[in-house]
Amino acid sequence: MNAAEPIVRVENLTAGYGHDVLLDRVSFTINRGEVFVILGGSGCGKSTLLKHMIGLYQPFSGKVIIDGDDIVSADEATRHAILKKIGVMYQSGALFGSMTLLENVRLPLEEYTDLNDDEMDLIARMKLKLVGLDGFTGHMPAELSGGMQKRAAIARAMALDPMILFLDEPSAGLDPITAADLDELILRLANSLRITFVVVTHELASIYAVASRVIMLDKRAKGIIAEGDPKRLRDESDNPAVRQFFRREAHATA
Image 1 (cartoon, rainbow, N blue to C red):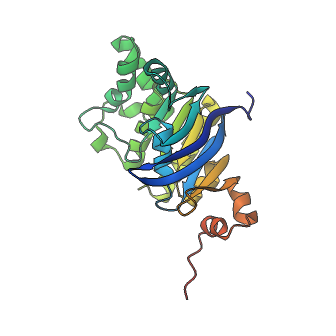
Image 2 (tube, one colour; image 1 turned 90 degrees about the vertical axis):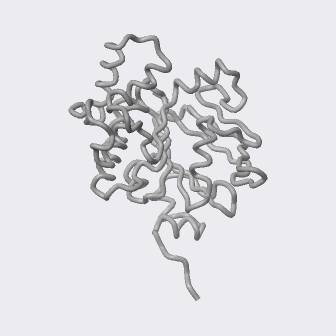
């Protein structure tokens, strides 16, 4: 595997809502096999960028090229093929409360494959085992802790063997130990399955633990103000806002 091979290219992406531009001509690449983190302060456009990258919204202009195809301009057939290459874990987990874990993980298989019930059950059980939940296939989401729900959501995101997993604030609402366990799971999956992870977060402990490379968004700049290794940005950046974020420093008061 060529670690420098781009699997995602965002080119001059301008995006927002209504007449408000939140991201202005943003460009970056994500390399195959990376754990790539999108970070920044509240309101900087992290989740907006992710939602445009996975095709939930159309940008004002620009491209999001995933494994060679632009999801922005793709026709229906190409878009369908792109979506099979990605998996998404939303911040809340977004599990269906009326379904067991096994049924939740089966959903993408029912939607996108022609497998029979036994084959879908087998794959769903395998995915749950990868995240350490093989003993909870018959449980309902409400019976699980927050961390277990996040793991189940990752299992569902992996159901179709995606090339890229997008995780939106995976550590949100978790205690530090559970968050550290989830970070460890992300690294293990990235290393063992060679999946590319794109993680949106502002949790510094998780950023330092998992990130191969980061981009930092800024609300005022409407784009990227820093890119690279988070520890180097913390120690070496000449941008005060970047250093302040990575060192978790409060705003100066008069």
